[in-house]
Image 1 (spheres, rainbow, N blue to C red):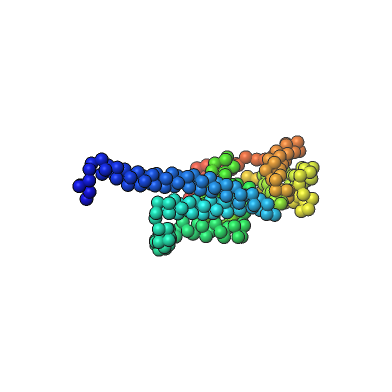
Image 2: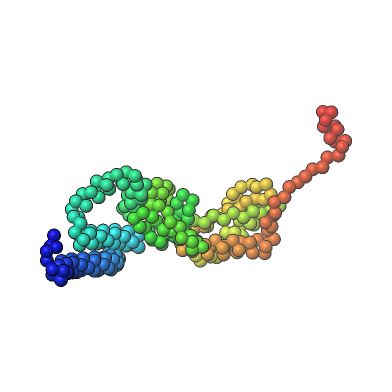
Length: 288
């Protein structure tokens, strides 16, 4: 177009056009990187700020902190991405409208994922458990670590991470072993049919009354639970504070066994009685 100009002038004109364009593009690129870095940094700070504010709310727990922190962090990163696109000249208004239309179709395709978000909100509203509670959901037991937008994280007793979708937690019965301050413990001990039942009951009751961790109300309860194939099954039912459940279970089982040994009360092994009839008896039965 400017072939009639000298070569040196054309070169200078090209530099005058290209250099500002490269400079503008480079500044936009550096600005976008800076926005991404600042957005990522601010999302982490916002998550911590939300956690700080939630912790100041009376009766709050870690579930609220992690859930609302996740929402704020995702929101900040969404605005960050939109700001980066605007830096490169993308019309974010039309993009948001396009994303809104596409979001409807994606939402229909990801109903399961969105149901996890809705279930997470319902879990926060009704609060069937708190962080630190030991729960059982669908046969899976563990201590609640945190509740996020999509999942509930548990830790098994041997410290294995268990991640359960929120919809599975909300859609099933939840057993919360930590909700109430007290728990009941049922222990069953088998004694021989030849042993004195009253003596065994007195021994179990005395062992329970000597344990200061057991509650006086309801008082320890002792009864004959069942007549088994090889033993008379005795029931010892006691109540204690929730935190003492496992120590009491282990200690009381040992104490009753030692008391039975001291009293001469036997805990029988499973046995079977076999009757052997001679040929004459069998032949008589056959004739009958």
